[in-house]
Image 1 (cartoon, rainbow, N blue to C red):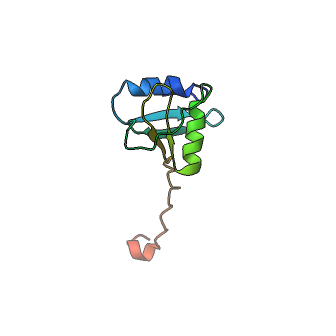
Image 2 (cartoon, one colour; image 1 turned 90 degrees about the vertical axis):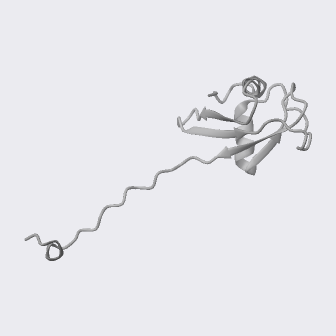
Image 3 (cartoon, rainbow, N blue to C red; image 1 turned 180 degrees about the vertical axis):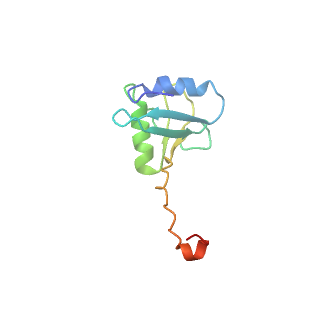
Length: 109
């Protein structure tokens, strides 16, 4: 769980401890909406991209992944790049009101 203002390097440092892909959860400051980001393990099979800047925030990665569908990135202490993609929020449908059944069909009077 992270906050939008946390440095990307710091968040990915914690991600690295888990030795595998992870879900990073973050709440949107203005709405308290939960946002989820799936982060792969760094891999030599991925294109090696430039390191994220030292001032990059986790919210920047969320925003790039939301705009592009996914984002390849690398932090300063990773030898290889990783991929982040957004897990869409579940929006529950509005409850459906049952149709009224005329009493002649239910046996009620």
